[in-house]
Length: 206
Image (cartoon, rainbow, N blue to C red; front, side, top):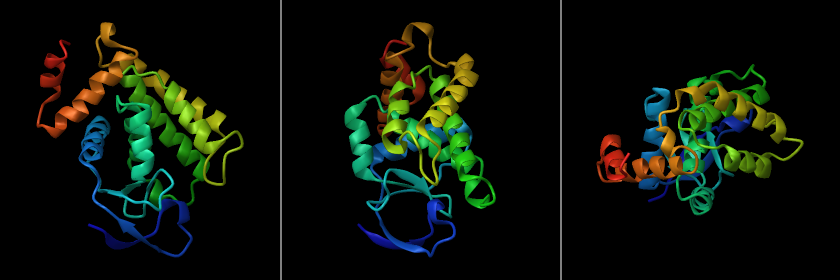
């Protein structure tokens, strides 16, 4: 069911409010968001599917808006869910640091701060950041935009966060690397059926 919502996005803090059509998110997106919110120790924010969003963003009310076609593409590229989780970690990084209420802060600095948070998430779960870095190159480019720093700087920030948090790796050594995506993805899917992390780990023989 569609409904109209008047909101100002984080990317147009000084512009006029925009009316956007929002939809309820898919169940797997909600479970993924819950998973990442627990990682950051944050309350789970509201999240909506919105076709007018290029990929994902946070609005003035600290709601997350995401493009369902974009997330569908990420899911096909990476069925382990790690790309989607990394994107959500980036958006939750904006919420964690309350960027929507810091219009005085350089937007590039805000993006780099959120990228470090995404890198920290990936590092904690011992997941290689290569796919997420490729995504940054694709959507930001070599020279960046008014809102986003050049991809090279963003990748540096992701790697800084990854290095800082990799020592907290919560996945057994024998299951690190490519296998971690299967573990985390299974936890997300398991959440749809009310399974706990421990139950999923036991089912996977971890």
